[in-house]
Image 1 (cartoon, rainbow, N blue to C red):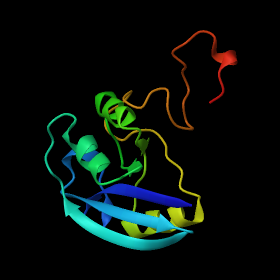
Image 2 (cartoon, helix red, strand yellow):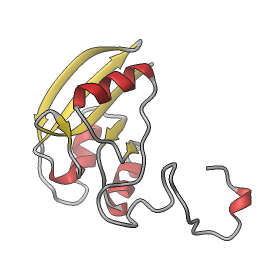
Image 3 (cartoon, one colour):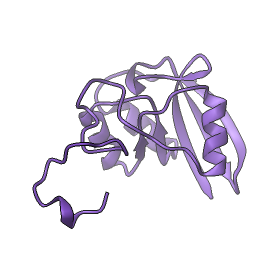
Image 4 (cartoon, rainbow, N blue to C red):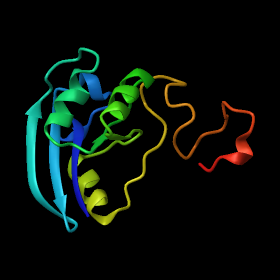
Amino acid sequence: MNLKVAISTDSDFVSAHFGRCPEFTLVDIENNQVVKKEVIDNPGHQPGLIPQFLHQKGVECIICGGMGMRARGFFDEFGIQAIVGVSGRVDAVIEKLKQGVLEGGESFCKPGSGKGYGIEKTVCDHPDDNDHEH
């Protein structure tokens, strides 16, 4: 597995909101080993800026506590997977990534912002639910 991820970071912990975190931890994982890890400052919270910034750095996946639907849309445009509902120490998250066992959940941003995503989803927006795999 070769993957470049960005983790929204506040001190040594995953930030609850990706856009307002002080910094991002960029991690390159190759063959389940960390080959590069760097901490960079958040470039700013203007809409669409962070997804573009991370895309230019080759990031394929963003990990954070939460993000709004608009931000998720920007990441989708750049083909960057968003894993929300993650908390804890950054190093522990990296360890789970290496093992392939990291799971996301509901977005921590605000109630309803992660609706339709994650394993704890209770309500579906579309009536033909049986036709879709989740």
